Amino acid sequence: IFGTTRTFAVAPWSEDVKPKPILAASDNTGRAAKRLAEVAFMQFGCSERANIEVMSDVRTEEGVCAVVAKAASKAPANALVIEKSGAMIIYTVADPELGNFLEE
Image (cartoon, rainbow, N blue to C red; front, side, top):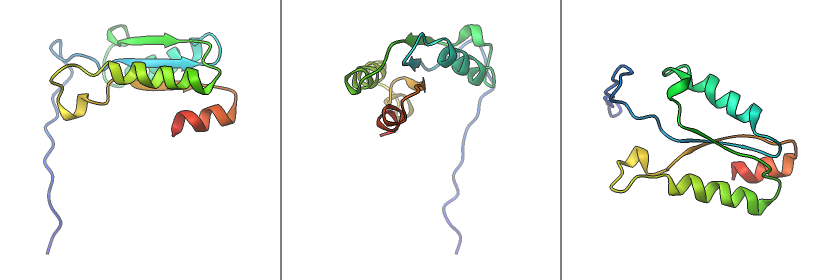
């Protein structure tokens, strides 16, 4: 009659929680992408604890592929399912085609 009920365990932010890596990719300096990542992270904890790496001057599809490969490489060995995606990517690019390629 009813759909499956899912139960989620949510723990408060604490010192034993390790922040997921974030790659801030940009076709320029990366300052705006880094700031976006910091602001988003503040919802979950102190932005100083955020594990943010800036990847600047990403202006080609090859550069995007390098960002995605680096994000994938951040998945820890013996990772839980939620960790297997590696790093989260936040990006700011002016070229709409490059932005679309990043979303794919």
